[in-house]
Length: 347
Image (cartoon, rainbow, N blue to C red):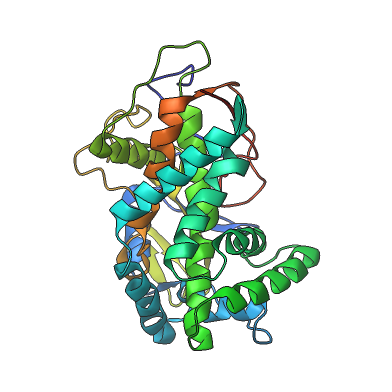
């Protein structure tokens, strides 16, 4: 566990909670829990539009998935994802993730990198296999390439690599109309960094240091509650973007139509008006109102599946691994928080 235990300090750059604030170069920031939830459920706040591209490219994928879809297409595309997830038993996902993690640890020797060796590849391999992709390991590798370029505005070289990876994933996906395959790929991409970031944060904050007291193996309910509290205090998705389609009043402020808005989950999840002693790690908080998975019609449809995959990996890490270093670096990204590496000892 980290030195400040049982408190977990905010990640660098996490703003304090307050009324919506505006700066010309960044637009509006929304930080209070009540305001973030209101914006997530108000149709006047829409996901920014994305441009499409030739079929089978990264731009085409973005424009075809429910994540970036306009309201008139979102429900139909989301239904593809919900239907696919309905066929997946979270308990089976958890068991398979644990089995694969054990296999990785058995081959690892006396140490491994959590991010590289388990947090990214294991959940993706499990999910890709259950979704019917022909080569789950190859699919996981390709998904990581797409995820690195998924959000608009990336380096053109990354986008070109992602174009090739999208073509690979579409070829590996089970036969279906292009838009259905696109949304299966999009489901994997959405799971990639978010699940890896959750596992990495849990390992960083909760694994005992080498030479420390054993952490024990938590039961199923305890593990889920622990991961939910990690999601609150150190969310892998720190924020999400919206654009106002009309003038709207939020948190006592008037936002004009066309305003860019950044909804800060990392701040809202620590709102003292909602969470007693917000920095304290307290699994099982009653009525916690976690916002990391979003809310409303665009809330994450795979929250239970993501937690199950992360729990399967973390159960094994907690039983067999110890943290080697207290410091941690994260990949540069404006809205995601994923460790670059996290070395642990293995027993």
